[in-house]
Image (tube, rainbow, N blue to C red; front, side, top):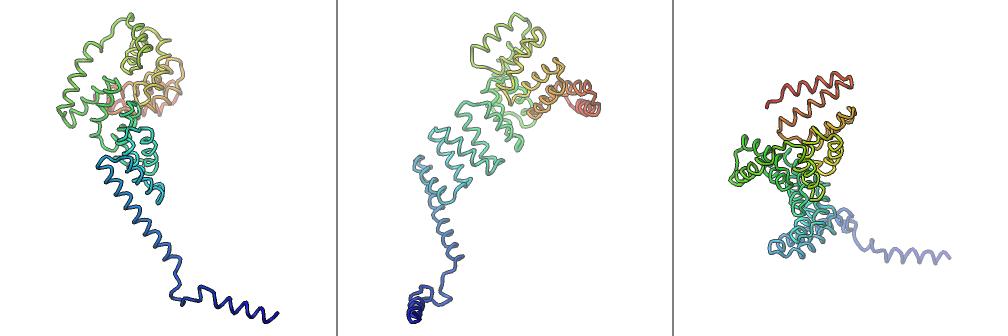
Length: 318
């Protein structure tokens, strides 16, 4: 029995692979890990640059395949997600493009170029309302990007908002030839349509709004008339305004005013204070918001808040 144990020990020591190396020659785990990472990094870079090369010659599907290899090596890389989105958009596959740019923005939510790409996807889908929401975020970073916001308002049939923003933009930066042409078009378009004087036109406007694709411009005219002559219609269409046009401050103003008329002052305040964030350099609109807020806070016996908005009113330059 003892002899057998001795033999096991002897042969075990003889054939132990770690004893075939000197202590210095045994590979360290850290060294192996570093080698693997380095190899993967090289592969990642090869696939990534291959994808850029294929995209440049319009082989978008092959570019996507190379990017998927990148994603398999190092998952959740924002640059890979961004490039995947670009290639899918070039293939006009906007659903996949939207999925990947949203993945990228979760990792870099304020990235200017990614946000601009998201706007491009929404424009391709003709989802101008979502494009406007994203462009408003961009404008907070770079105010000069309001030029694109003007075009988006125009594409979304929000002509008065586009024209108002053009006037602000012109004072600060001047207008390009393209913006001058758009301004002339908007001025001509608005001249015969901005004045609506009779209640007889309200049923026609409502009919047009219900039968055709909902237009903010038409809804705004309905609300402008209904507040004077048809309060039930005003309540109904102010409820629709935020659902259909959630990036449009006038929607919040209308809903806030409707709630105030119903004596729901706190609800009016909540809506109006959300809507204020969507106002971009529109002093007249700010005056309307602040006036209702002063009234609502006064009725709720909150003089400090009422005074706060009174001070804001006094500081507005029209």
